[in-house]
Image 1 (cartoon, helix red, strand yellow):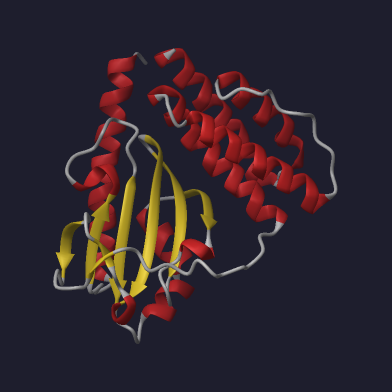
Image 2: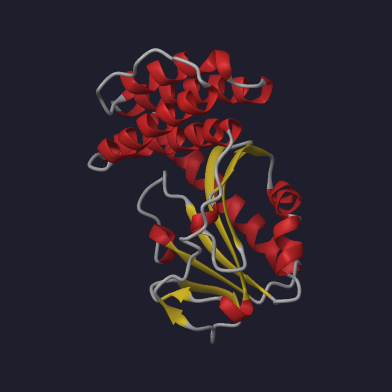
Length: 242
């Protein structure tokens, strides 16, 4: 596969995934679907992901959050999933999902919000349903102090490492992404009381290679498979872009 083929495949797969997402949440009778991030007016490039704010009736939001994994799985096979309560709309949830599709890996940020507390970002694009919901600054559950388990930290490392590929190619914010991964790496060691080899003080593909090599022995069966696939994906991106 050359670069042109990769880009074509990546964009085609993203379009198909988007149509599946929309069909899924329309069928769930969501109140509204809005999109923000680079996808709101046209994607930056083939690496652009989805940032979706999905509003549900108040009397159904708890059930939607409870059934979220089943809902996400109905869109496409889940590769890695990570939640962050402090990024959740009040009374709702936030989940980062990496999907494993026939066209490759894709990243979706899902924000589930109850109608009574849904405050859509002012720059969000209306996609479906009720576009009269309040707009303005995010109202998120920043005070939520729920602690992550070591499994959760491991999954977060996997998700962020996938995003770091994009950051390296685009340049600029790969430094911050690599720093965050180092922090997660440190958190994992503290939670598990394990001492892992140190990571390179860099923000490039050499950093990625060392990260994957170091964490591979410590994941469960699913996580180890994910590490191997992410490692191969990272090597492909390096070959195509660098």
